[in-house]
Length: 65
Image 1 (cartoon, helix red, strand yellow):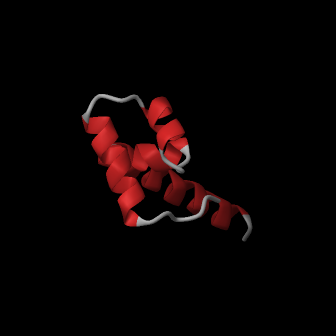
Image 2 (image 1 turned 120 degrees about the vertical axis):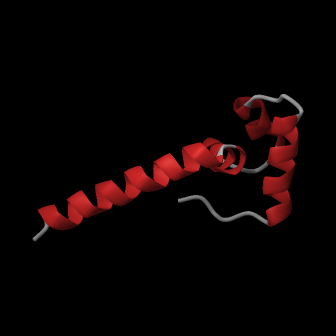
């Protein structure tokens, strides 16, 4: 799991994305992983991933009972 970075790092990633930089290019500019950058710049993707993670955890919990 990646370490949480200061808020300014996420703001910098958003700024670079608004300027048209790709997610892979942003990864070389700021100390974030690609999923962290995707979460910062694409809220819809973040919601989708959160739902997928919750569903996976529920399946895992039910399987262990």
